[in-house]
Amino acid sequence: MLFHSSIRKELAHSFAATLLVLLTIVVTMMLIRTLSMATAGSVDPKEVMLVLGYTVLGRFHIILTMALFVAVVSVLSRMHRDSEMVIWMGSGRGLAGMVSPVLRFAWPTLLSMAVLVGIAWPWANKQTSDLRDRFQQRSDLQRVEPGQFQVNAAGNRVFFIDKDTANGTTGRNVFVSSIEPRGESTVSAQAATISTDDRQQVLVLRKGQRLEASPDLQSVKVSEFDEYTAFISEKLLALPDDGAMKTRSTLELIRNPSLPAQSELAWRAGLVLCAFNLLLVGMAVAAGNPRAGRSGNIAFATFTFLFYFNMLNIGETWVAHGKVSTLAWMLSLHGSVFVLALLWMIKRHENISLRAWVKQRANRQVPEPMAALSTGQGSA
Image (cartoon, rainbow, N blue to C red; front, top):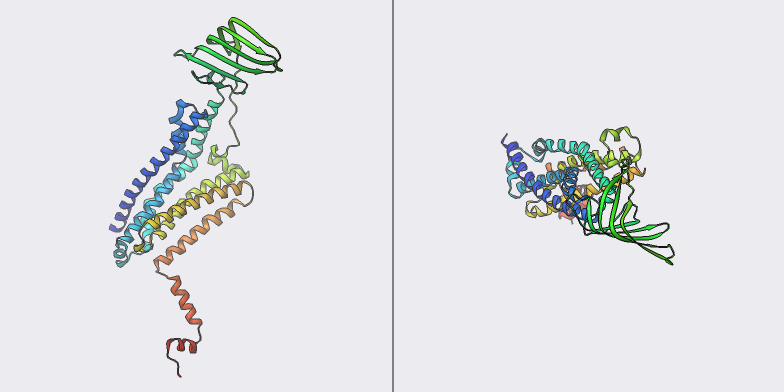
């Protein structure tokens, strides 16, 4: 009882600290990325925190996997370094005895990861995609920002407003440049007002002038006006992209036999299997030489996590392109890692030395007279 409780308590402290550090790093990186997207006009600046929340929620399962793996490696490495494992081994608790308390501590996290991957991941991706699409597909008038040149959705009209009112319906010092089949036109006005005409928004310009050039730029027509109405066509919101597999629910992927759906399903299931296998790998890695310190174990653990995660992404691409079947890839990747982790743990638990085993096998194959000569016991 003391053995289980002490290990789980130390794992909880290490897991919480690692999770806090990783979450801080990821949130900072995602915040910088989201702000860059807002600056580039991909997302609404007013919805930066909302997009950030969806992004972090969609990737929280990866943070949990890394935090759990690092916690197991760091705690068990500390126990070996401080010779605490020697005491437990002397009392009959070997490396195999670590499996039970580690799994009892980790199963709530593994269950939470399965829920996040199966439910939160597609939902967060769907919400983020809807926010970005709604902002990208907003009307041309909604794109106008005071003091900035803005291009409409079609890319053939440029707007500029120096100042606007608090309600955003009236502006001053307005500039509109358009490229049309009959030529280029430039309109400038002292004031502009947004109004609605037959369910369509229009831009009413007052006290300005219009410059219209022919396509060959051979003739230019200049006219002044007291009021000029510019009809700005509204762009309807497009239908959701049904091809985005990352936004589909897990149940929809199970019912969909297409290769992209199966690759996404294999990736989601592989994340949970990856987290479980990394627990076994962490216990095997931590049972190393106490004199080597734990920095080498942490570095190896980080490399293992990155390699495993990259193989998940590569496998998703291969399955989507039909290079390998879903079942074959799952068995080859996760099955091989599971078997290697078990063999590694057995080797550590039984204290099997491969070098001594090879040397022993080599000595058995040497003939007896040669072995006697090598030991100096042969006759002259």
